[in-house]
Image 1 (tube, rainbow, N blue to C red):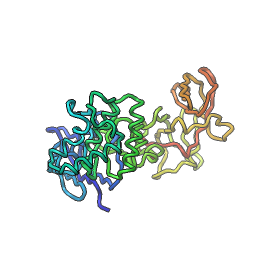
Image 2 (image 1 turned 135 degrees about the vertical axis):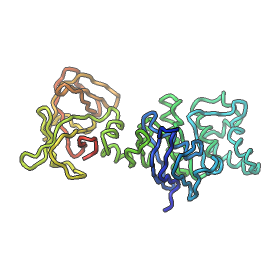
Image 3 (image 1 turned 180 degrees about the vertical axis):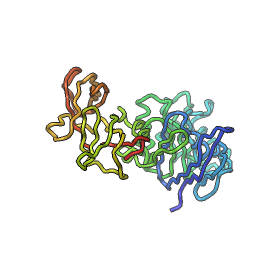
Image 4 (image 1 turned 90 degrees about the horizontal axis):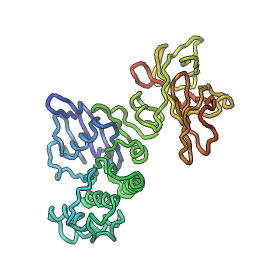
Length: 360
């Protein structure tokens, strides 16, 4: 199957400073790909290069089977939504949506039909005669999205479109964008630093660091089987718990040992052969079972320092061997700071990393 977007050995540099080096990635038709990473990792630079707003140093960018590496943005067959609404304040919503089409010289009947379809899709049909100042932030962002959709292209690019909205509006529009992709079936590439957006929207997530993709996989794969320590620590709220120690094979079975803790690794699925040596054990707060002894799992005993109630769930922070670890529980929690607990760890859900941070 031909890729909707294909990046081949892409390099982007500012003078002698490389931002992206030898990146290659194929994005399938109808796929929702999220570029996720901390500020300065190169995700917006990559998106702008795909859009034609950023010159590339080397490599190629293909969209719908066409090499567009040096094409103007208007000739790439893409629609783009920016972080800023950038609406024309003196124009009605109808004129904001139709402006690009009118500049392109499309027939009036075609423009009217596209605007009507897009407005209905985004629930803007009753707001077309208003101006941007008369709309809420969420409605303005819908208009910004609609301005890209009226182009009716195969590939849409989103550059942190929800970051200027409050939490409630972000949640609402995140659902709307998900529905939009399901209804339209276009290829969408979405930049964000918000892992909740990434995990809920994406078919695949590309986690970037210093211009390099650390892992490209489904949200479930990235959450449960992170490729390295960076990915494991970046994804998850609270972040994954880490315990440094060693892998030993005293009686032939691999065991992780650290500060009096010994965890049998027989149930762990190693991706590569491993030998004795330094390792880091990682496990998410929801991978712990409150009563470890009853469940027959290896326990990590400690004393609660903080309880964070969150309505339907709670996060317990507890001290183990001078280190703070977290445990997520569903429902009401009667535990309080100072209480002892000994949660159990299911090693099948845990992650192990070697000395250089790669997953074992």
